[in-house]
Image 1: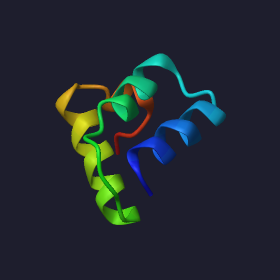
Image 2: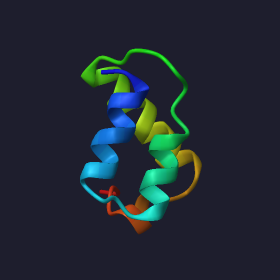
Image 3: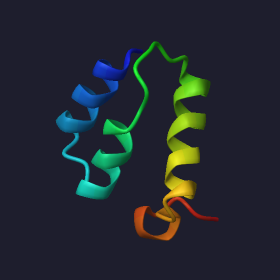
Length: 57
């Protein structure tokens, strides 16, 4: 998946603004599923949005 694919998919699912900001912050490039998940998770944790986005354990 490319960054553009991720952005279009996020827009399709009408993500909340904070989640959309995380997707828009992805560096350009191609992503495997695992790499995309790692990038998104790192950005969510780094921004302190885990609880807000419901991604904490």
